[in-house]
Image (cartoon, rainbow, N blue to C red; front, side, top):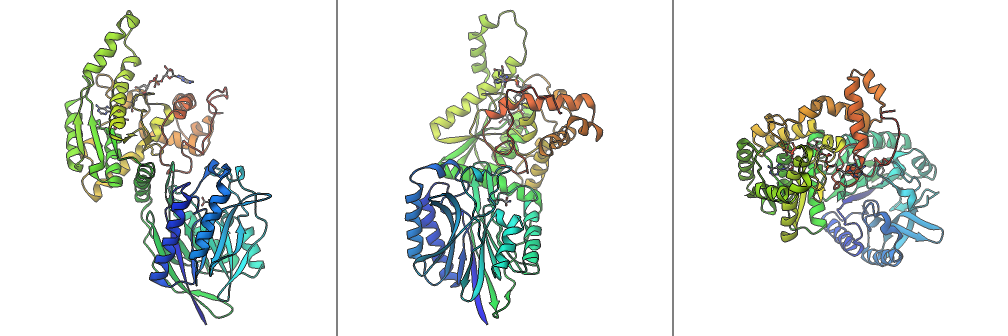
Length: 542
Ligand SMILES: Nc1ncnc2c1ncn2[C@@H]1O[C@H](COP(=O)(O)OP(=O)(O)OC[C@H]2O[C@@H]([n+]3cccc(C(=O)O)c3)[C@H](O)[C@@H]2O)[C@@H](O)[C@H]1O
Ligand SMILES: Nc1ncnc2c1ncn2[C@@H]1O[C@H](COP(=O)(O)OP(=O)(O)OP(=O)(O)O)[C@@H](O)[C@H]1O
Ligand SMILES: NC(=O)CC[C@H](N)C(=O)O
């Protein structure tokens, strides 16, 4: 009977930092060896470049930079098989590869067979498909490799089995969306059962622009039973022990980190998305406009959880329509969370703009122009603070607003990262309530009051938009499930309202193209996985 200790090295690389990522890989190899003396260490997909490297894969220096990295990893390898993901530049094209390093040498390589090219994935733009399974010997155990999407389809596991494998390793870069972990677990259980062999699955962790990779690496037995689950959202070396009797591989049960409710995962995803965007882009901190409303209130709480209060600044910028309740609530929240807080009136700035424009606007009626000017005064102040302090401006538009264009270009849309971009207004409320169960962070009054842009006297969002519970359902059907207007109406929604909302969504594409990126938490965010033309004449909702 042979025993194998296998480590899943769930680490957080930085896209493009091949030297830094290589150092991190070598350090993880050393830590894994010191803690567990493993026989095998599995890293995530494309860990050498980070994922997704996008057009960095087209740079001419890729080949020699990756080769230097592989030489360093080979040199650091000793008595454990180390499996690492990287792009392989070959004569016929580029492969998404996994290399097996052992005793100072790259022993063999596998090329990803199933290249995802849907939703946020664009792998066929860069890679060519591998055609064969790879089975190699790990101290007597015939072991096969697969890379992320390979395990989402049936054929590569069947081919590995036919080639004699008794253990399947899967290295992944699998981004989060609400409910994804349950999908992954059901999939791995099914695939292990179909392939008749256990699967060790190592997922990437970390934020990369709009994507968050949540980790939660796993081991499932041949019968599909979960044997180990690493924690999500953190780097982690998970260790499992397997016993091989020459025919079968049996895993001991190891650490199984509890699953959290999906809402909590969404919250953690938003936190990690902000933290990694700020850290990996070198910002000293963040600044945001705090209006006393729920969107900026939740954004502030997420920012503080991501970075610590000392790196977060909140600015209340009142105007004549700002209620004293808003000022009190903003101040109370800033104090509650311990962030730097200023109150800067936009009244004189607004007056100055209006005075300059007086001749231009003479004889015209007050309209949205004046409302948008308020939002723009605020945007200018926040960007000035950003420039002076090296702080990133966080914007606060939620998915419902981004969908219908309920925001001002160069106003409240001015900034670098929109934390709630993929969070519907209804989910904003749920997340705010959830966050307060951990510790008081958002004053109850902020959660309870009706949403208002406060750009005109006594303004409420529901004066110009349908109530959010209805709006969000219509938006979800249209955006996430591609339903037609007539299908939505048949489900019981008012015809005029549905056409009005869908028209707003289509018309607002130009705004979304100019909006900051934000973390994706649903299956269909407004980013890489929803690409609509701005200039178009498709019949609304058809
Ligand atoms: N197809 C196109 N391609 C490129 N640019 C296009 C365009 N169509 C209009 N534009 C440009 O966009 C301008 C209109 O956009 P914009 O200036 O933003 O203004 P607009 O969309 O007309 O108004 C902003 C709306 O957002 C609401 N709002 C503002 C701020 C905060 C909140 C909140 O509660 O969070 C809500 C506000 O009440 C108002 O209904 C046009 O004047 C034109 O310059
Ligand atoms: N008085 C203000 N002081 C500071 N920032 C403001 C103020 N009013 C608006 N903002 C900024 O503009 C964003 C859009 O706010 P607005 O009140 O118009 O709509 P909202 O979507 O209901 O947001 P919130 O729930 O945060 O109020 C706010 O989240 C905030 O960042
Ligand atoms: N990198 C990949 O191949 C990821 C695709 C896969 N279906 C996932 O989201 O987990």
